[in-house]
Amino acid sequence: MLGKKMFYKRSVMIAIAVMALMTLTAGVAAAKANKANFSTSGDVLGVALSTNPLNPPSVTTEFKLDKKTSDIKSVKIHTVNEQVFGMLSAAAPDCKESDKKSGTACDSVTAILAGAFIESTHESTATLKVTKQPEYYEVVPFTGAYIHVITGTLKGKLAADLDATGSQGLLEGTAKLKIRGTDQVRYACVVGGTPLEPVFGLIDHCQFGPGLLVPIELHVKDTGNFKIEGADSSVRGKLTVTVDSGFALVDGEVQFVTTGGIEISKAMAEFGN
Image (cartoon, rainbow, N blue to C red; front, side, top):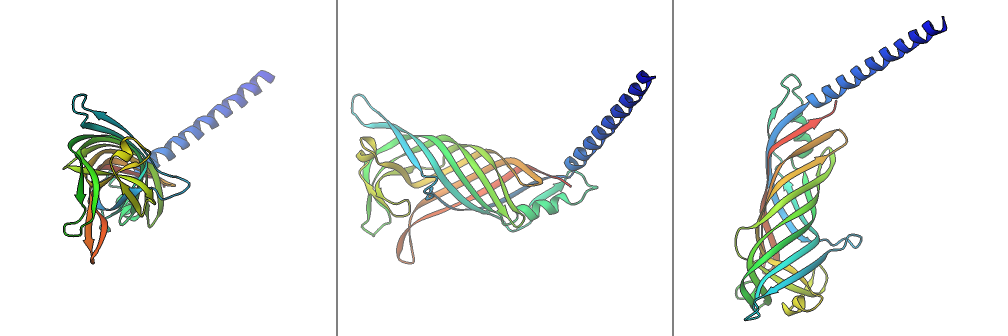
């Protein structure tokens, strides 16, 4: 008799467990059904080393020289805590519902990403193939301001912590991108000051001393994959970022100006109920 009761209780427990599993599976399936494929774009607003004292930047370099002439052939540049800022378009993304019965996923994509502020804090390793030996470069024509620079082509990769902040809050994640130069780039050596007001010196100060080698004219295209997540949302896809930076006259004042674009393509967003 005791055996029959135990068998009955065990059967009930198994049935409850199966029903719970079916309910959980159905809930997960329902949540995953609310999906959309989309693409969108935006603008790059700036690029700089981190100014956060709790997250300080660092730059290490390895110079490779020609054994016969001692000319600089290339420089391997490892940068930690470099930042790129941008803004996505306020227009609704080009979006298509994965589940036409739902009809809400594209509205959710627009709510979380339209006009979102984008911030990338990354670590990069790149190689500057030198095309011009160190020389003085006039930062803006006719200003008489010169910086000692090294010129070349750039190639590398980066791993980023990527944030998107829109009207629905913060999405956090990562991105892995390849760095490819689109034109000649120039690097200078920072020997003092602050990230916002640097003091430049000779390239020698980075080659033989503790200076930080930083881009003062940058033309690159970074491409790769990203994934960001919020409380009940997940977004992943292809990311392309173009950056063009350099000195320019703005209202009669020399400033470091950055332009560029952000392209998100072949992306998928997934939302919970």
